[in-house]
Length: 359
Ligand SMILES: NC(=O)c1ccc[n+]([C@@H]2O[C@H](COP(=O)([O-])OP(=O)(O)OC[C@H]3O[C@@H](n4cnc5c(N)ncnc54)[C@H](O)[C@@H]3O)[C@@H](O)[C@H]2O)c1
Ligand SMILES: [Zn+2]
Image 1 (cartoon, rainbow, N blue to C red):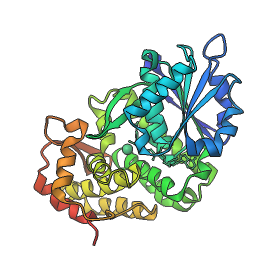
Image 2 (tube, rainbow, N blue to C red):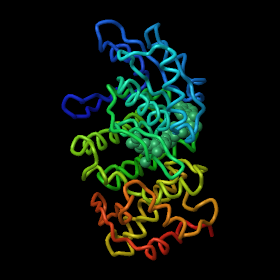
Image 3 (spheres, rainbow, N blue to C red):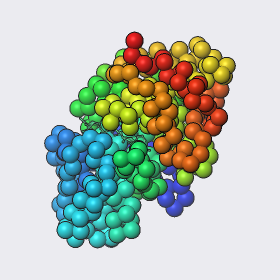
Image 4 (cartoon, helix red, strand yellow):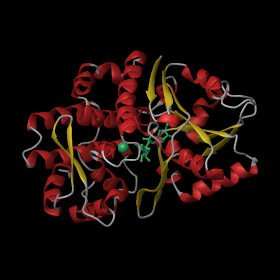
């Protein structure tokens, strides 16, 4: 079992990681003198697989509100529906919401927790690798609009993050790979030693060896916790975690969420690294190291079909960090040397995009 702290003053919390740690939830829930009512907002697929194991660790007065899996659940319609259901359950201020599922469940349930009764407490119980290494930590919650990803949301920190690696065993290979994309991103912007570790332990990671998985998640949580503690609301440093994401969000939107978020991040990193190499910043061998790691983890290197570069550029302009301003990118001057730039031109991007267009 590993533990990582997120140091945010009175909003500090712990991340607990390891096999079977869901049974520590009861202790987490001793947050008020009387046992708090718990409502689990659960991805239906995850509920079918793991709800029995989870509820064994919860007080008897717990309720479950399942929702259909997939990125489309991150909508204001779903927020309204879940809030109505909470009201029908007479969920009050003492209620603790548990987000049970991947990044979609965390973003959605976290946002519901932020707005229901102007905020009730919540705990993240991530069940995808992507959510465990990234989405469940740091307090970004939100939903999508037709106009783009995550355009409505709130910074709202959980009470705790409980990552039971036993839940991750049922994850598809594809979703496991999607999580590894964010892990490679963390390594590229913050921790080159983690790049090496990925390569050295690739077989064990892909086999989901319990010790290696726990180590992988703990290292990622430590990176994210450190960045978030220094810049909770993304006024500066935290933006480095958007490396690969300007392109990724555009692709997710244009492909109507046909690819996983992590898959789009892998494609986005490849395009953005190409931009960095062309500018003479990132040495080619470093870009190639990242590229070969993404390939080793079976992440896509090409789009499923050709997309018009002009459409990708237009979609980049819709990203919320760019609204009303130039398009922002987090490029690399080298490994662990990210830089935010706003002067990338449409022509530069269109050229770099060629590397991910289908042959
Ligand atoms: N808040 C943040 O800081 C942050 C960071 C990164 C990504 N995100 C968001 O996270 C979302 C992507 O998260 P995701 O990749 O986890 O997607 P997801 O939540 O849709 O999960 C992917 C799939 O895995 C299934 N699944 C989940 N757990 C499972 C398990 N244990 N066994 C079997 N199947 C399981 C789900 O039903 C779903 O079909 C995106 O919306 C992205 O914007 C948020
Ligand atoms: Zn991401």
